[in-house]
Image (tube, rainbow, N blue to C red; front, side, top):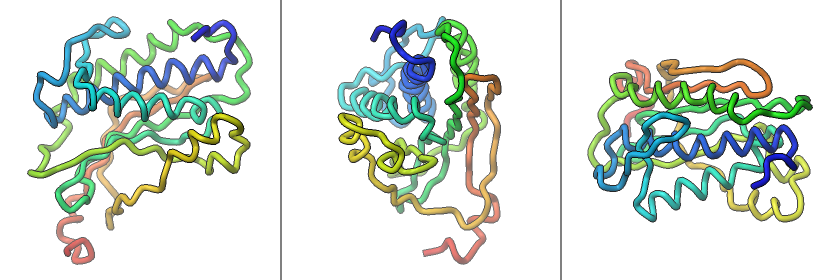
Length: 213
């Protein structure tokens, strides 16, 4: 895609979705959800990362992240979350990317400057395993996006309408107690603000009778 002919928001969104595709792959590898042969060592943003190469896995991650492109560009996406579940489909851990793309930023974007900032997130992910918890047997995972408002209500028109229809409400169960939050990395400068943090059940969650079957 020719970034020279894009708006600043389009340039930012393009870099962000490419970054998210790699970051999600790194997270799934980190959790040991699939055999290591499903991944391949690649260099991205001058960082050695684990990129999914299994066709179905790589295809799922790519289709979800690229599908977010028009909505990230318009500032509609608040969070992109990689959720790991137990066998009862109750979340056991969430990797949360919270982002804000400035809609008023009008200057040209130098992709290399954004990539330099996002590179630090990938470096943090490569050493984040001590912050995480082991997955239970028969666990599952998915990528979820949380929108600030419904895309169809914000004038996402024409061919993007079809993309909006692909996003369906999630049936993710909610924790009864506020989660434990572990910050991993953040950047706070326009035109892109991003936070990466872990959400895990509060120690009180298992003791709450309301969470028991």
